[in-house]
Length: 152
Image (cartoon, rainbow, N blue to C red; front, side, top):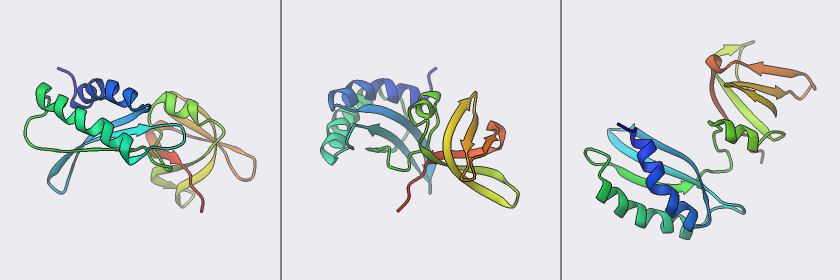
């Protein structure tokens, strides 16, 4: 049996493509007692509310017909965001050379957050070029989150 996220991704993909976007990620999570099915989309130049709606409405109907989720849930379709998490190898490949933030499960040298330029990704291990020009590897088992770094 396929995971809920895999089924939702298959159902969402044609609607996402029809809206001129790409499917970034799918999450099925429980927060404060409520289940959420989140579809994250991306589009060159950004994602509009109209594009989210163009995916949400037909996807909601398709999910009702396929009925892959027992019980109630909230469907959300949104942009992947400027500070989007990088999870898949293709995410890392697309953002090589960009600034990212790495969050660790446990502190290293008294810190749990590091920021630098994404230099490499190898089977979950992330390499950053730090501000001082040195490269630092963060092993997959120690890395909680990698996301694009946004400075204001």
